[in-house]
Amino acid sequence: MQSTHEFIAAHKDRFLAELLDLLRIPSVSADPAYAGDVRKAAEWVAANLRAAGADHVRLEETPGYPIVYGEKMVDPAAPTVLVYGHYDVQPADPLELWDNPPFEPVIKNEVIYARGACDDKGQVFMHLKAFEAMLASENLPCNVKFMIEGEEEVGSDNLGNFVAANKDLLKADVILISDTAIIANDIPSIDVGLRGLSYMEVEVQGPNRDLHSGVYGGAVANPITILCQMISSMHDEFNHITIPGFYDGVMEVSAADRASMAQTPFDLDAYQKDLGIDTVHGEKGYTTLERASIRPTLDVNGIWGGYTGEGAKTVLPSKAYAKISMRLVPNQSSAEITRLFTEHFKAIAPKGVKVKVMAHHGGEGYLMPTDSIAFKAASDAMATTFGKEPVPTRGGGSIPIVALFEKELGVKSILMGFGLDSDAIHSPNEHYGLFNFYKGIETIPHFFQNFAALSK
Image (cartoon, rainbow, N blue to C red):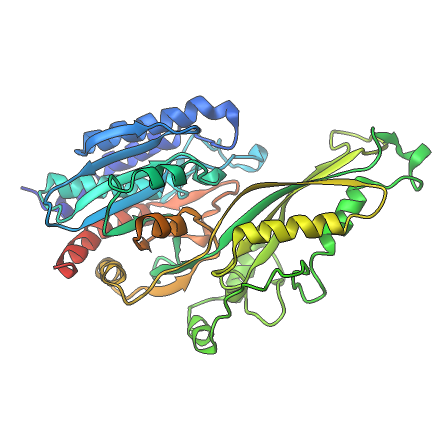
């Protein structure tokens, strides 16, 4: 019988072909126009999981998109690993900035280009193939459960209710997630922290209709101008957020931990060159790595209003809109930040306009202990396949469901991702290296072996 490693080597071309098929499904959860495709992706994942050898594979229906569930219980005495991921993807807009159609994956220079290639189809698919390899080689040392959802990119609104209602079904010893990045292909790392999130939408209305800017300009408040002024006022000259009470719950990172973070390899010139910028920007008193991980932020994700079509139209718009996200750090409550933002935004609106504030979704930050057997299992697994110990890092992104997992299931999560920050997730030309895809499939079985051994 083939070893797990031999099985992976023998089937790697098939693994890649299957991933490309999954990437061709435009499972955009944010746009109702793609609802059929989102469900198609769920059915595809379920079928692949079933073919890999999982038992009791099914779609768990929710008020939104279904959750794919499957399991393999090899020994009641063995530890259980719950694998979490998502099959939905971000919208591909703006389409004109893609070098190739986002749902027609191409491979260039050993890199897969497609929406979802890294976030999260490529990474969650590593787990299905690692599971298949372990099972086929009779080398699955842990029980394993899969919970793969279709609403992560829109806030996982229905997953929380599913988890709370199915605690026995989801009972596990650790949750394994690959939805994060490593520092570089020659510098492995494991995220030990995530930021929380509060995502808002605002509307500013001036006159009751669009007006001629020549006739009314200068005499009536322009909602776009007012909105820009309001947004601008939410940072001071030191890029410190001015919402009253915003920092009250912020967990301050110790000098020792900041010194440890400073040892993380980071090339500022390469960072700026990759982004096409000539300098970095952010809160005074913190480094770039700190600003992007241990500090809260407020960013405008989209802003619109008035006329944006071809040519000119001299209009003074009736309304202006913006979408605003706030990344939060541990000890900040997303519900409290949503309340503070709402109150502040309404308070700073000048006379002459009306404002609406709508909360979309949010979640809490997360810190993972580095002295657990699960972390050691992951660290040793990456050390085996990369040839060096991974660096503990804190991620700047949010996976809101992680904190809820711990609250509802009482289980810690291991964030063993294999992407790169340069993979352009959520952006045009998202991509994922073949090296990273195969390295994940190779590493995951080592985690299972290590976790089983350390759990005895």
